[in-house]
Length: 147
Image (cartoon, rainbow, N blue to C red; front, side, top):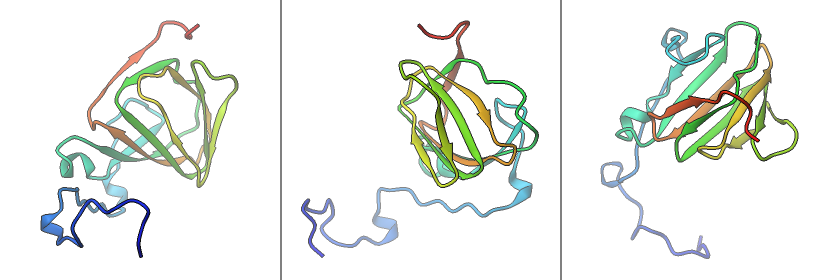
């Protein structure tokens, strides 16, 4: 099949020739930890940080108790942040955008790095995959909502 854009490679590559990452994470309840910033969810590392040398991080996040309060306005120092909802829903507010942004099961969101946001609601059965670049990043809370 011919594409409009020429391929980047001269032909199919063997796995060991690829510069891309290869990682496999199996679902295991025992792999979930509380190693994350929110007390109402738990996290499972999907192995992309190790496979990519820290360029990409991916976590499976799931709710473990009801959502009691907003996260508060904050921002992340990253270049890419993607959310894929696999169960339930989550609601965000973003600085510079009117109204709420609701991501339902099966939906995804590309969240701009550095943009202040607030998680204001979520379902009690929420599960999502979060991918961020780089794997390690800083998060800063804001004392008040952005103007």
